[in-house]
Length: 91
Image (cartoon, rainbow, N blue to C red; front, top):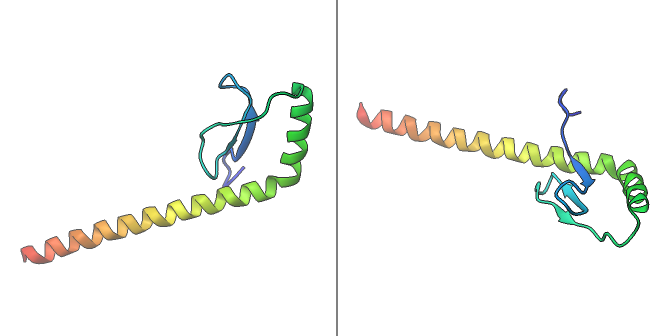
C-alpha cells in the first residue's frame, strides 16, 4: 500500500497468455520470461526475488510517481504563466 491505496509495483504472472513480469516503475508492458522451467519452480524463484527486492521495487515506483507529479506541477505552472501573460497583454 502506498498512501493508503493498493498499488501494483511489480508482478509476475501468465495472465496475458504467457509468463511475464511487469515492472510498473518503468512501464506496465509485459516482459516475457523464460518458461522452460516447471511453473512451480518459476513461482518459487520469483516469490524469493519479490520478498528480497520489494523495498527496492517500491522505491523505484515511488520515485517514478514523484517525478511524474513534479512534471505535472511544472506543466500546470507553465500554463498559469501563459494565462497571466495573456491577461496582462489585454489590459
